[in-house]
Image (cartoon, rainbow, N blue to C red; front, side):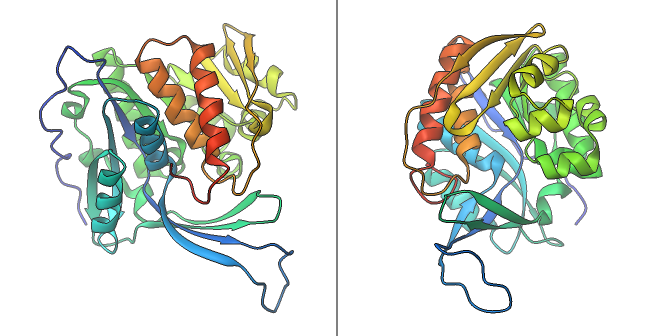
Length: 310
């Protein structure tokens, strides 16, 4: 399917509000399989299996709305196989979908294997997600937007990485800050840390988890990694799961934020919940430490239910 013009952003947000959050990223069909016993090779393992709407970008937008963001929009490419379902689920969550249908590739699909410890392992078919093309983007999509967030999965495909670069350049020209979630330590290793960092240059905020921060810097200690990354990005927030988050700026750690206690069921989407709540708070002018506290609260809520959405 050849890319057409970017989706119509519709009327701009009124100047009286804080402005919208525009997420550019991925919509995914999640197949979540929770198994209480270790996987048994070459035979059956009992599991509870659910098919749910997901995707890092989509989850961030949904959590932003849940956390008080007045308007969240999502630009993503989806297969025609499930475009209507995903559009409906996003609208139900209060997100304004700007979905580009793709007739040649199915919607991205992730199989999440969740063990008794609530940790998850992903099997990922990126499908249409990495086919988001420069032709799907338009600077008009920045109308009424106060912040842009880029899902890091876009950086792992040539076409979608070019699109992410255009978003960064156009947002910079419009004076709109951009945040980036590196998304996947495994995919970062394949692409290369320096290639990712160069492609994400110009972002105002980087939001890696501890594994991603280690992969990007080579530093085993998350605080050291956060400080190193903050020499390249004005603000860095490294999530540590149950241990909260670390903030860094200007080459030094500026805050350590604890996470509320939670009894985890499924850790899928906990980082997306942090990001959505963090960005919603930043939109209202909350300082980074306060935004990280909001993010940690959302992450703690996220792990108590199955799937990545609120």
